[in-house]
Every structure is written in C-alpha cells, then in structure tokens.
Amino acid sequence: MIDMEYAGYTHLVAPGAAQPLLPLLAPIIADMGYELLRIRMTGKKGSKTLQLMAHRPDGRMTVEDCAQISRKLSSVLDAENVIEGAYQLEISSPGLARPLCRPKDFTFCAGQKARIKLTQPLRGRKHFQGRLQGFAGDSANGAALLEVIWEDSDKPQIVSFALADIAEAQLVVDSN
Image (cartoon, one colour):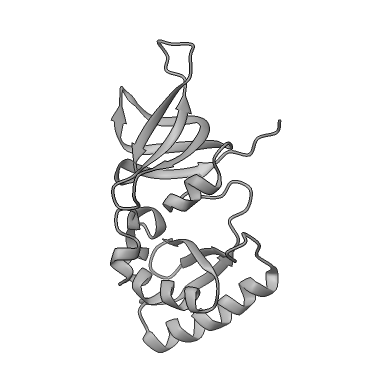
C-alpha cells in the first residue's frame, strides 16, 4: 500500500539509497501520529547518516517528538538490520526552508517563495524561483504551480511542474 500512497513522488520523499527504507519507516511514522516529509541517506560506508524529517499533522514538532521517533526507529532499524554498516540517525522538523515533497506540501505552502530544481531543463533552465501557487491534479499525475518570470518577459506566468520532473523543491526564507 505504501507504493500507492507515494505514487509519482517517491523520488522526492525518499531519494536514492533511502528509497528502500520508505515502506518500512513510513507506516511506523504514521502509526505514531506523525507525517513523514522526507528520508535521505547521506555519506558513504562507515560514515552514513539517515536523515528523517517529520511533523505532526498540525505542522508542529518538538524536540521530544524527535526523540520519540528516534527511539522507535532506532529499535526497528536495529532489529531489521536493513542498513549495512554503521550510521547516524537524525530526526528533525522541516524548518523554515522546508522541503516540498508531497502534493499537500505545495498546497499548504501556497503563497510563499519557493525554489524548484528540475531533472531536465525547461526552456533552457533547470532552476526556478518564484511564488508558490499550489498544486493541480491528483498526487500521481499532478503538478506543482509556481509563478515565474521568464527572461523574455516582465510579466509573471504560472508554470506547472510535474512532480516526476522535479529533482528538489523547497521554500525560500523570505525576509519581507
């Protein structure tokens, strides 16, 4: 069932080496009453770090919440022995420059500044920044909407980016 839940955007929630961990960890996080935003595995053999970002459905996250998730996942990961070699486990909240990984992240953060990096160029560009306009369509085939100003125009246009084409997306801290 986990595959259907993340259909079309697994690469944003659990990119690369973290992807096989998604079916194991996502249900545990959900059963604990949290929402999983992203899992990442960084580093190489001997110095790996498993980073997990989560929050409560209302968007809040405390240090104790992080500690509770860490204790639970540590015991599961140790019992299942799914990560080869030593690793560090980091649990955090999304913060101000939160990643945008799920369709509801784009909807929830509409109106805020965001940065989107594509896997392939669109009109010669892979990097876009603008005001997030939400999400259109269903989770598997939908698109993030971003207000963009093209080089050949001074008027902003709303551009849709299919989730499958997004390599990374995150909020930009706006000082205004």
